[in-house]
Each structure stands twice: as C-alpha cells, then as structure tokens.
Length: 73
Ligand SMILES: [Zn+2]
Image (spheres, rainbow, N blue to C red):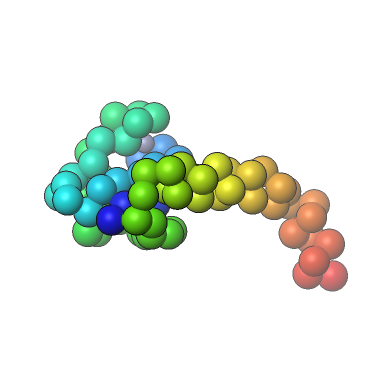
C-alpha cells in the first residue's frame, strides 16, 4: 500500500510505501516518519498514487485565495 503524505519540511505532496518506516522527501530530502505523517490519501498501486498526487497538485493551484473568498461569500 502507498500513502500520499505531506512533507512537514517543504509542504510538498509525496508518495510513501507503507513497507518503509521512513521516506525521504523527493523535493527537499527530509526524512519523514511514515506513520506520523499526515495522510492525504491511500492507494494500492504506484500509478494510482501518482495520479492522486497530480490531482492534489491541480486542486491546490485552483484553490486560489480569490476563489476561496467567492465560495465563502
Ligand atoms: Zn520536503
């Protein structure tokens, strides 16, 4: 199983295998303890995990402060 987690150092979304206790961030190299990380999503395959990460990235860029304000008002 794969977990989609947030890097606590750089805040980027990364993929971690549940087989590993720690995972190095592919962006900043920080070591992340998989169990204590904030899990955004889970997936069974690498391909699925990559797709989820891409979707999360797109969602993040769409959620601009302006759009957010529009929804609240
Ligand atoms: Zn990082």
